[in-house]
Structures are given as structure tokens and as C-alpha cells.
Amino acid sequence: MLAPLAGWSDKVFRLICREFGASLCFTEMVSAEGVVRDNLATRHLLESDREDRPLGIQLFGSDPGVLAAAAKKVVELAPDVIDLNFGCPVKKVVRQGSGAALLQDIDRMVGIVRAVKDAVTLPVWVKIRSGWNEDVSLDVCQRLEEAGVDGITVHPRLQAMHFKGAADWSVIKKVKKAVRVPVIGNGDVGDWRDAKRMFDETGCDAVMIGRAARGNPWIFAQSREHLEYGTMPGDIPADERIDICTQHLNMAAEQFGERKAVKLMRKHISHYLKGLPLISELRAQLLLLEKKSDVAKKLEEYKNILGEKTTSAANTGDNHDRISSWAGE
Ligand SMILES: Cc1cc2nc3c(=O)[nH]c(=O)nc-3n(C[C@H](O)[C@H](O)[C@H](O)COP(=O)(O)O)c2cc1C
Image (cartoon, rainbow, N blue to C red; front, side, top):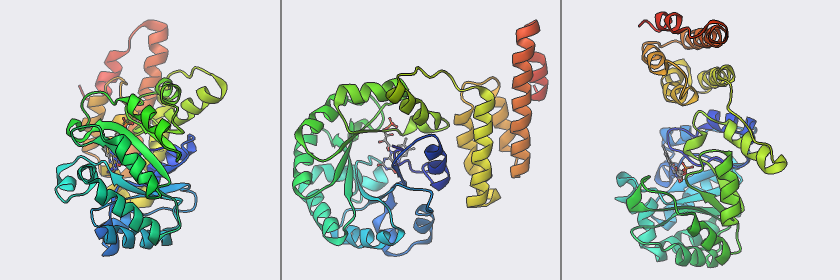
């Protein structure tokens, strides 16, 4: 599954991850207040289409009534799952009593789940961290299960850890043993080996991947291949990475318009091309470009240069001069 990732897991990125075998994909967290007030920016975050399925819409908020009203409203968009964010550690969110702040108020969490379950017939899932400053996952999950929750994603870090320290997968294992609803493991899956290891070590029902999917939708195909056939997938060739990156750019331009897409794609491109030669030079050049066709051309040139580098490196040694002059060094 593709994790909800604010600023990343939009419709276009979800479609690309699906192409590579991601099953359930999630919208980024969307404000329940924004949904109820029909805020325009919120509406954009909820854009989807029929191919973008199965889909989980993730809501955040702190008021059971508002979350229930928002859930009722997003049912019109026909998602497959409504997911409640009980884990976001960001100050702006926890200050309003939402996200991970709710891990300090289990009664309120239970109230939210009950209210949302009463409002809709769709499956209602939650995504939690292990706790605020101590692990309360077992208590939380058992109480949420009693309240009728249909699935639980566990990102086993405390709020205070943000993204520091390792995710403690033993928490996922403990939760899986304690509840009957599906448990989705999340946290620090960096490649297909980790995906397999998470299934083996925790017994979770599904693995959710966040950061490692950025610029690397192949992680879903590779994990599936390994799980189903035991294959040991290798590195993705540079030209394929650039081709999918260009496809992503084209789809983003169609969805968001050229201006927004070119800006949005800068961070995606950095991830797609991570580790390739002269990526920082390419990044600097892309910052100056505003037209989609120019970005696509630059990517194609870069691909050709890399191709020449590989061929000439194989024949005669390195080809750094040619690349350097292309990069304007
Ligand atoms: C840039 C970014 C945005 C995120 N946005 C959300 C979000 O909107 N909702 C949510 O539940 N978690 C969010 N997360 C947390 C991820 O869904 C996931 O739980 C976390 O990154 C751990 O998984 P990973 O190690 O596979 O990345 C975000 C994480 C990052 C890095």
C-alpha cells in the first residue's frame, strides 16, 4: 500500500504507484473542517478518478461531530476506505488537538471512531503512532477495535520521535496478536527486502510504504515479485527511471496545469534520479525552467548523456568531460 504523504501522494503519484502494483493508496491527510466548509484547496486534495482505486481518503481533525460530517461528505467521492489520522506529529496539527495529540486522549479517539462509524457504512480505518511519549498502542488498538474500527495502520514511532530513531516493528507484531481486524505495518520499509522482512517479523496483513516510494514506484513491483516468486530484483536502469519520471511530468501537467506541475515535479525528479551522476547540476538547471517541454527535453538530454557515458565508459573509460560540458561546468 502507498502511505498517505502530504505534498506527495496526489492522484498522479497514486496512479503511477498503482501501475507498479501498489494496491490500496491513500490521499494525504485532509482537514475535516476543510471538507465540511467545502474549502477549494481541500477539494483539490481529494481529486481522484475511477482508475485511482482502491482508494483510502484520510481525514484529520479533533471534533467527532466534524469528522463524522466530513466522512459523510466524502462518501460522495466513493472511496473504499475512510482513514482517520491519529499519528501526525506536526506542531500545527497537534496544537489543534488532532493527529498524534489524540494518542493522549483515548476517550476522544474512541468517540471519533464511534461517530464516524455511525455516519457511514464504508470501512473506517485508523493510522496511529505507538504513542505520544510512551507506547500506548495496545490499549489504543483494543479500545478502537471495540469501537468498531475496521483496520489499523501502525507506524511504530512515538510522536516525540518525529522521523528520528528506528521504527520499532515489535509494536506491529504485538498489535497484530492482540486484535482481529487487519493490521497494516508501516515504517522504515526501504526496499523489497524490508517489505518481506516486515511481513515475516510482524505477521502484519499488509505493508504500507511511504518515503521509499518517492521516485521509486518500482518498490511495489519488486516487493510483489519477491513475495510471489522469490525473485531478487536488481537496480532499475537509469533510462527507465528517466522515462517514468517524464511520464509522471506529463501526467502532472495534465492534472495540475503546466506551471504547478513543473514546480511540483522538481522534488519528484530529485528522487527519481537520486544517486545518478551530476544530479545536483541537473537540479540547478531544472530550477530555471518553467515549461514542461523544456523540462522533458532536459531529461531526454540527460538520458542520452548517461547512455553515452555508459557506452563510452565501457569502451574507453570515463566520459566525464562530455557530461561536465552538458552540465555547464
Ligand atoms: C512528507 C511526508 C508526509 C506525510 N504525510 C502524512 C499524512 O498526510 N498522513 C499520515 O498519516 N502520515 C503521513 N506521513 C507519514 C507516513 O505516512 C508514514 O507513516 C511514515 O513516513 C513512515 O513510513 P515510511 O518509513 O515508509 O516513510 C508523512 C510522511 C512524510 C515523510
